[in-house]
Amino acid sequence: MPSTYTTNGGIELIATGEQSGTWGSTTNTNLQIIDRLTNGVGSITLSGTTHTLTTSNGSLSDGQYAVLVFGGSPSGTNTVTISPNDAQHVYIVKNSSGESVVLTQGSGGNVTVADGTSAIVYADGAGAGAAVVDITNTFTPIGALLAANNLSDLADAPTALTNLGLTATAAELNVLNGITASTAELNILDGVTASTAELNILDGVTATTAELNYSDITTLGTSEASKVVTADANGNVVLAEEVQATAYIETVVALSGTTPTVDCDEGNSFTLTTSGNTTFTFDYSGVNLTTNDSYAFTLKVTAGGTHTLTWPASVDWPGGTAPDAPASGETDILVFYTVDGGTNWYGFQAGDAMS
Image 1 (spheres, rainbow, N blue to C red):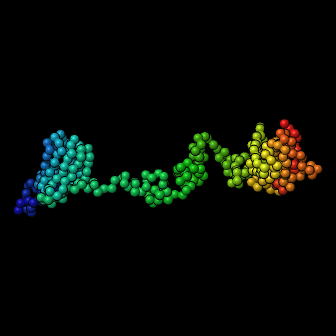
Image 2 (cartoon, rainbow, N blue to C red):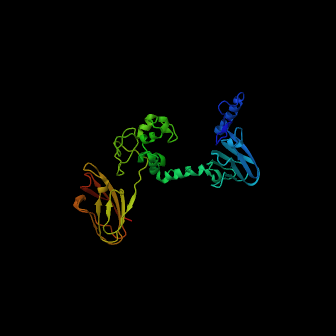
Image 3 (cartoon, rainbow, N blue to C red):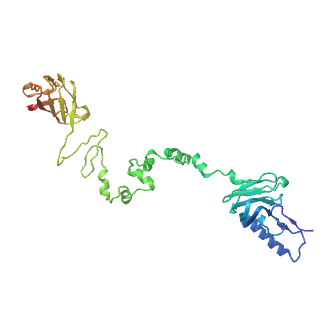
């Protein structure tokens, strides 16, 4: 009984009792064919516009390679016909021929591999109506995967992380966008407790553990020995000890109108040029004064005409009588002082009829 051959690879199937003395040679050829079918890379030289890629029975042939590298110098688009048309094949194709390569096996459909590109194709071996199919076209591009998961949407990091199956707190995301982060949040970067050396990277200088602890205060808005000074939620700072300064500068707040309010939260020095008879109000609510706090402010009043001045009833003047208002064009300097958080004020005329 003569040998038969596998449909797709052309491997010789030796009949029982056949090829006595030559069986080993046939077997070696079969193993070489299997090697090509599984791992072989074949350089296919193209010329003209047509080429036949043949799988031969019982012998090595180009159609048995797993990887086809097309080269040569075709004169135009080259049509490569896979033969025979009833053999099934899977090919990894790389086209370096300088022209497009059209892979065909029958009338069922072809695949064009442009010059400089690659593809994975299979021939279905359906005879005259055989088709070659590009498997590569069914793969999802990596760019589409990134867009589908919002990984390219840097403005929506939480959503991107969620789509990856990860979660992150607002504090953890702050590490990424430059918002103030605590030591614990910074430790998220490496998953371990940060050392002094690691924290020093943040400011570009060398700092000891003791120096870093300068900001480790118990309560915001209060001072502690050898610690940094911080403000509380209202912007206030309470110092436990003395303040030493080379110069002390106050902000001057200009008042206006005939019912001005001296807002003690805005400053300690106020000015007013009268535009009519004037009634003053003192507002110290924003300063958060307590009954154990003292506070003082200076008021410069310039008369814009012959006008009267009316003061809050809580002001206690020397002798119980308020000083006369400045004459038109003159300026008076007045000082007001409280030692019980604004419940009562002591009023003094520090300057009279100043030009």
